[in-house]
Length: 449
Image 1 (cartoon, one colour):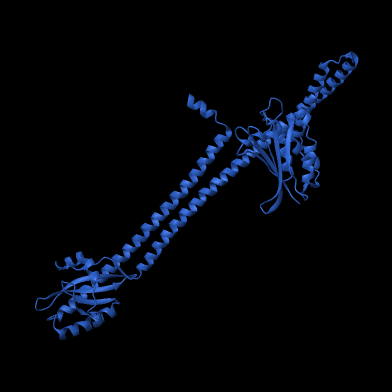
Image 2 (tube, rainbow, N blue to C red):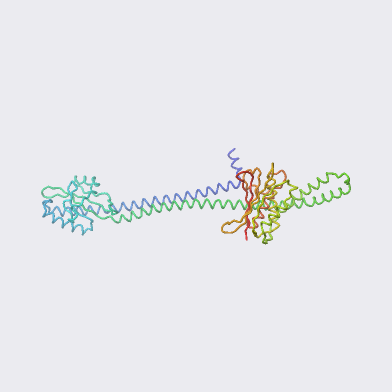
């Protein structure tokens, strides 16, 4: 029951994220399995082709060696006789050229060369023959044997060994060496396969990164779309509620003014009338916030000096309402021109100053305003930072821009949401973060001229 309940309580976003993750994992797994099977199959295929080629070369060498040994033994009396060796050398050279062999020679049991088709090579050591000890032992039983594939200085070749006998009972071994250069093609394909495997792995990694990025972007887009839809509904509701509240407020204020004039003693003013007006004004601010949030801001753009706009916002800061505040601001000597709606940016700056002051619960409130010219993606922007010396932002700083989110006992939670909306309509961005020491900073950018 618990597992079913928790499963049913999953949000649509969580279920969507789970499905997206499963889809990405499935695509990656199928791709990885395909690449793995393809590379393994290619490797086995290349090895199989190499095996067939090697078997064909073995059969050809054995046939040639048996035929050659029969011809040599027919006229062979003493293999160690120099005169007969000259005759054997001629026969071996003819055998080598006719069959396109690399070498043809006769050795004894100690792997010493007795006769070579090319006499200049008779004294050359052939130590690699010792690697064919198993094949040479088979010669002792009268069998014909082929060696493993040899590679010397990048050249591939194979040997075939067949015993020969002279009339005096001397035993020797006829060795034929055949080139196997076509194995270079196998080696080339094998190296290509290794390179292809590495490239496939890199492509798989890139695919993983791409799918992960695409999934995140898709979820982000869907989340922003859902958020926009929610905000649209909330905006319509806020506009309706604001209009419904504004009319009764006007009646209450008018009635309060009439009652004040009719019943208040000018010698002894009743503070209850003052309370009524204060609450009416607070509700009016609340209504204005609702209406600002519900309306789509349409900036009336013009060129303005941001330094001057900020100075005007600081001068209009209502210190008598929010308490004594120390504002530190050092504007630049030259102008910083931005294309903006003067009234909207003034409202944003003033709202951020008030928000910074309200963040300081105890002690002297110090607000620092910094403005600088920056480069973002190759374009000039004006960067405005407003910092306080309060306790900082609890949790995710981005939550403070959510509509109706507030940590204050009084407030609608719409001020920062409206401010960010205004900045974004100007083509800028607004964000918040906690300072390394104390307090927090809210910053925004505006395209600079």
